[in-house]
Amino acid sequence: MSTLADRIREQRRVEIKIDDITLYASRATDAQAIGYVQNATPDLDVISKHVDGWLGVKEKDFIEYGSDELIEFDHEVFILGIGDRVDWIKPCIEKIFLEPWERLQQKIITEKKSMPGTTMSSSEKTSKVRKK
Image (cartoon, rainbow, N blue to C red; front, side):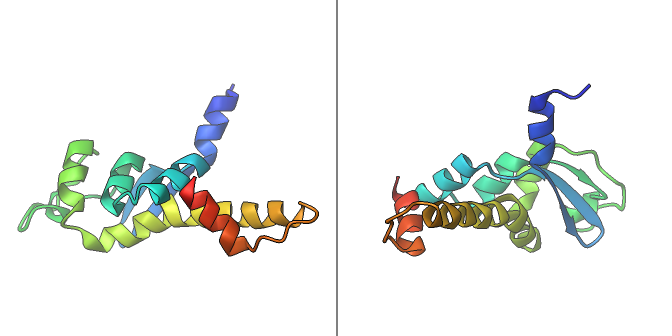
């Protein structure tokens, strides 16, 4: 039987498909997304906090002239290797941060529309979220 906590964690799971590999991660929560914006957190730091597995990664994905041997996920190897895999950064940041950020912005717009007498534009409201 799944607990509520398990269901919340499962809801946050994302798969990031890049060519023949799949990276597994958790998406940023609303609070994390706001924090990343406020602190101007570098993409690699965001990615390293969220990716926790992979499928189809080979030694040669990280080592020039490496073998075709599949390797088990190792967070340290991921951290060391991701910096040289700039082709992995954009797809990772889209799934981990940008999609949740866009969802959060939509929540803010919806909240603004439901507040009678509000005259603040959505961009002003989003700006305030970033400054909090």
